[in-house]
Image: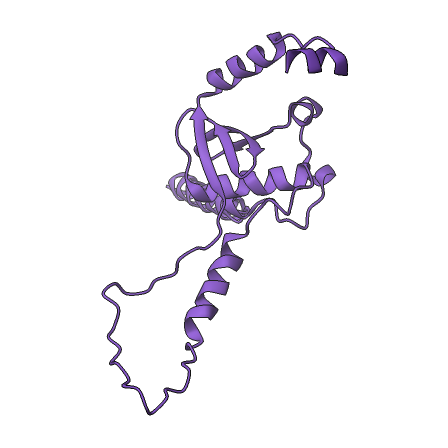
Length: 187
């Protein structure tokens, strides 16, 4: 009989021990909060091959993403379209690795600026008593938070498409050297 009690106590203890380990693992930083702009390129640790190609590669919860910045759009390749919040994290990684923080727009700062702009009332000029003052009506659409600036992401296809694009770039022969006299003859 005591063997049964011992067995159930052991099962109970192992169950709660495993639950505690799950709780510790659950405290990991969410993906969308990774790569704060205060990090350095060494801390991020992107491969030299990707840096030479001008891209970053990251495993997101929705799959592998390869990203490149071509002003003013971030182009990315993945198996499917990826959620905006995960693309924001990959774009931060790109900004850190290539030291292009000026190209990255922090969406939270922009939202705060717009919220503050909506809170401050518009100052109206004092109306001249000589002219009639027209009645102002409420706008038809409620004014919401509109983002003036934001990062633009464009899905360019799957990873196979990215590899094909890279192969085509490598196959293109460089243009032959041309002197100024030859250029002038062609123009």
